[in-house]
Image 1 (cartoon, rainbow, N blue to C red):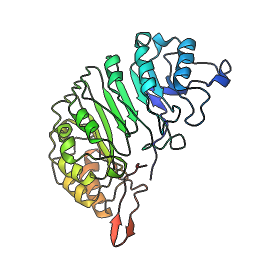
Image 2 (cartoon, rainbow, N blue to C red; image 1 turned 120 degrees about the vertical axis):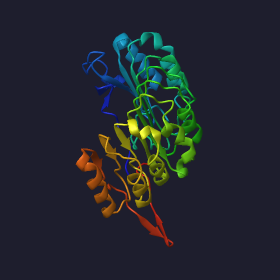
Image 3 (cartoon, one colour; image 1 turned 30 degrees about the vertical axis):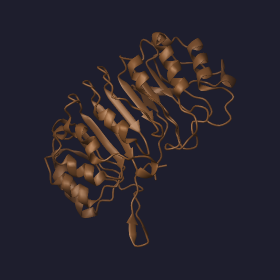
Image 4 (cartoon, helix red, strand yellow; image 1 turned 30 degrees about the horizontal axis):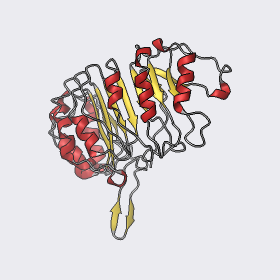
Length: 319
């Protein structure tokens, strides 16, 4: 199994962690617009809440120049959602006129496992920042993503071990005319990922996503069904990159994808963490690499377990 990692870059800027209260004044601060600012508290036994850290940040940094914020761990994230964090960011919107990128829940497993992160309603953030160009969220438990209209958003990423079906449907129903990059980790039913193929079909149709060039529907236990549907999905013809990685992709889905509409126009096809046979991988190479398509067919840690006469396969990121 793989794990979600801390962001190292946001909006093309390196991520810089705002110093804690014990380091205040000791660590030189970069220019406000030179980095993406990671703000965090301790998930366990925090001496300072996230909102208190944010208050120190707004006092120490010229927020009118801040272009990217990464919300890291908050106190007891396994049990408490980011409601106060979202409210604090919304309340500070007038002081953040240059904000173009926001990520909510940048935690690694030792801080909080991805499926233990308690999320909340992210709609107010998208409403409060109409000039936002990049938005991401990690964690599916309690995640509410209402259908939104956002004219400037170019990149949307939702990383989960299990994405609630209502969130999937509402993203598919959102009006995002500028969106170029969509990355959804659908996850497994064991951790609340209860969407079906019909829930992502509006995304595959692409009618609400006229600018989409990178599509990732990944980390899914229904990866075969998604791959088979992509064989005739209208959106594929205008994509630069297609990412069906991290899920339970077998020869059934892989063969259907390869036997469908041409993929030779793609710049990249990402299928890493898969359960494909070597002969089928070779067919992908023969058909696509000669056309200049970059392929990622790395099996990675996609190991199969056999128990009680049944073969068990797993997504890359679950718990």
